[in-house]
Amino acid sequence: MSQVLAYFLTWTCYGTWHRGDERGSIDREHQHPGTDTARPSEVRVLVNTARMKGEPVTLTPQDREVADRTIRDHCEHRGWTLLALNARSNHVHVVVRCDNDTPPERAMSEFKAWSTRRLREHDDRFIETQVWTEHGSTRWIKDTNSLRLAIEYVEEHQDR
Image (cartoon, rainbow, N blue to C red; front, side, top):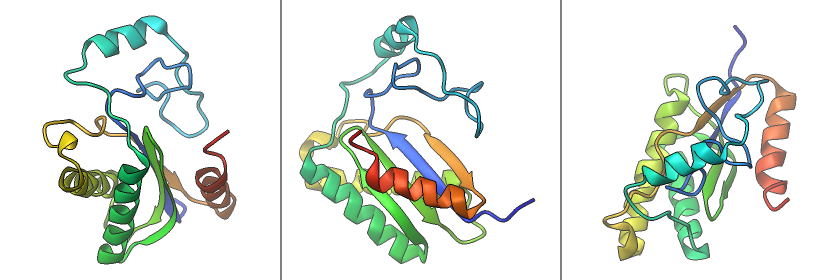
């Protein structure tokens, strides 16, 4: 098994990107590297929208700064190497190198939890609100070319 160079983590804001979305989504059949995303499905989006327990959450530029600073501070606190970060209005991308004992799900969970805490301190509208969707995408990066492409995607391709 090849060594993991970093993790490429992505999670979305609550209610802003449903399974079946035309932008692509991940599900049990479409979660492995090299597989396509799930096909768009208007029915699936409608079903998931109907199941929501609150309003969709979008991040303002100030909210994005709070999430960005929190993730950077958490990496510093944990001794992790942050390679790329982009907090968007409806999702967050992180490329991070963690210690050998930290699985990607734990790193993402910690980023989401601490960002939620700081967002709730920053703005009362987050106090009674689910900020993030459950889980997210946790990709293992095992070669330098994939690492370069992930960093480039996070830093340069988010507005395209």
